[in-house]
Length: 332
Image 1 (cartoon, rainbow, N blue to C red):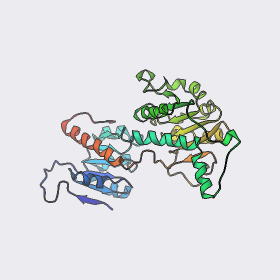
Image 2: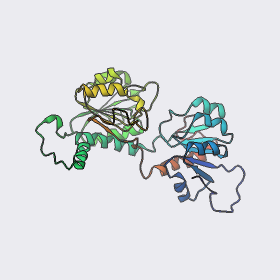
Image 3: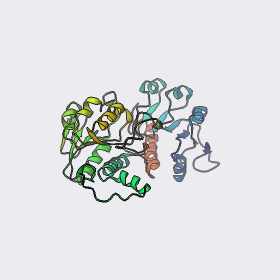
Image 4: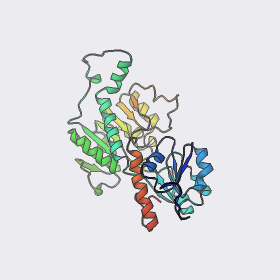
């Protein structure tokens, strides 16, 4: 249900140039968190695409992620700024924003702690058999000690992790993995930009060689033409036998058919996925039922602090917009 409330209290006269903010998300509580800040600007909140389509013309500023459609720009003559709720911005057509004079900022960095911790949790969940233990609990099955090394819990210390993407999420993840005494290899588009604390760093062209050394490969890169299907059959085949793949990037970074083949052949011991090509994952997808696939429903970036993290960026970008300055995390 959409809600309206003028910021700063009822009856306050505002100049006509005061921007109105639309918060558009199916679940995030941006409106409530904005009110907790005293609602410094007027706002309304929508929870569905039909609501957003009906009211987009009222918004000067839009805070959105999954509900965005590039066709909305033509129906939004007042829109000056889109503050994305997501760090990834592949859903936004830059040419559309430029054509309509709308500025776009990502939420890059707002989920760096959350996603890096989630990626580590997925890796620990697999190596410590936590997912299997939960299944055993539901079956009231006490598995006992394991003689077979292939199914026994493992340690991360001394193993090699390859982190693909060394931005704010990746650099924090590198520090977490180093704290567990892992050897960490960073892979980034420009290796000359720095190691971010990794033991070594390489460009994307070196990926097949470093994959062969990795006990775990963790994807936290943005989705770009360069990274679409980055982990295809050839690169999955180049991975060290028995390695683990963790994907907290975007589903389309991985060729899912090739991934299932690598799991079925035994090339990979497990895949932990927070993202899939199609979301929600369709019931008929074999990923649901594969015994060595572990899924979380694209929740890596979600925390109880997330709305406030993005609203901090929004307020800074509103200031910059008024001052005619480049935006924080400006994309278009």
